[in-house]
Image (cartoon, rainbow, N blue to C red; front, side, top):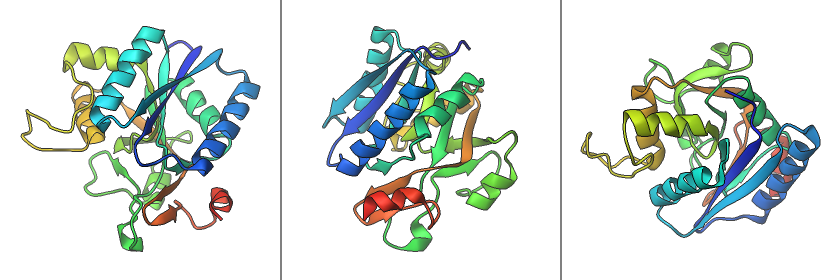
Length: 226
């Protein structure tokens, strides 16, 4: 894959859109601009659409705009300043789907799982397990939360050719169930044999209905949540 020249940032707004999200995103965009890694950045924004339709039509716009990759940053995440730089560098290193980590935003600590699964390991991954399996700073995983990832346009091209449209859906007719749209997407990614990697040291704070939830208690981004 060639280095990314034209980058898209997918933003899906529902009942979210914290000002801390915007502040963190624009700081990360400044870091990306100073890095010189990409030539241009375009926002691809959806307001109020069902999440599967929002992602689906955002990728249609990616193709219409001639973008090389889409960064998905959920609008209830507080990302570190170097997040976009690190995502782009992972993608340019040859990882077609790459991401960082965040926890499920729940009230009980035991329910605040990292939304990532290892390959051939049942259940949700722990941070220690993700770190133990890291090679060259990244860990191959079966799936991860799509809201903190970078996905190459080639991924969507391959999926359209091998598994067909839609890329995202909240009903899987083949499985006969109702997954979230990320699960639907990663099921087809697995069938197409496309690898997925995460940086186990790239973390975002997930700030939802139960307040901010960091991956580790000492996350610097928590300062933005005070």
